[in-house]
Image 1 (tube, one colour):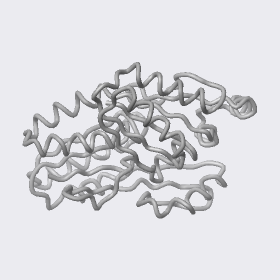
Image 2 (image 1 turned 45 degrees about the vertical axis):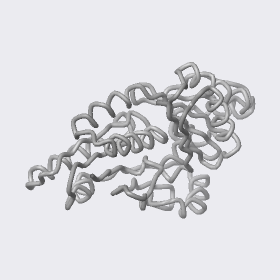
Image 3 (image 1 turned 180 degrees about the horizontal axis):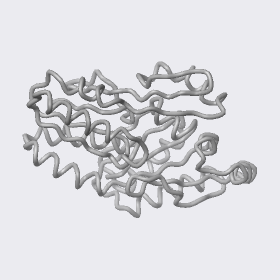
Image 4 (image 1 turned 135 degrees about the horizontal axis):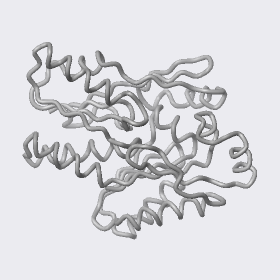
Amino acid sequence: MRIVSDSSLDIRPPVEGVDLVVIPFVITFDHSEWRDLDWSQLPEYEKDMKKSKGFKTACPSPNEWLEAFKEVEGPIFGITISSRLSGSYNAAILGKELYQQTGGKAQIHIFDSKSAGGGPSLIFYKIQELYKEGKSFEEIVETVEKFRDNMLTMFVSESLDNLGKAGRLSNLKLKVAQVMNILPVMSAEDGLIIHSASARGSKKAFKKMVDSLIAHGAQGKAMSINHSGNVKWAEYVKEELEKAGVAKVFMQRTTLLNTLYLDLNGVIVTLE
């Protein structure tokens, strides 16, 4: 089995016992271009990100997906960022079609995570779990699709700069939020990022997020916490959700793409 993902997955090879290929997004700032390869790039990348007045992202091409599907024994599972945020899912589907047209025989399924950050991570771990249990290709696809549809993804960032640069906050709203120390609590709904609530100050904002996650139901579930350098509040979320009965927690530092979406000092959480 091989797992192929775009770089919305904050996990990078080598991963023991897993044939993992991660295809990078390309992120362009005012005067620099970055391929989302690994965490070693973050110090310089974050400097460019904060200096830049805007940014663009380019998803992996169909040919890059095609190359990642070649020379594999066994099934292939692809994972992408939400198809409503990027063209990566469509590119992966085209890559699959090209693979089949050129005689490729491996079974391939592409999972649209309908999320970012922790969503692709939980899907990655769930695929492994089911494969190790000896589930068939069809059983893995059906189970992971249902698992994906029940996930809740939420995030809070102590920096709002990139929300403004991306046009998700007007200049006026951004200035008011910064002056009043108001932080939005964001969530993913059917693959789109929406504004769920607002709170004054980090403590209230992260508590609102935690309360929403607990209300979703935490007992016995798995959770992924991905943070862009905000260890303090990532640990707070972890402790509160463990008190609420979460059985398994995966914690990761975001790589380049998710650091861009989350901005500095953010925490994005996905609960199954």
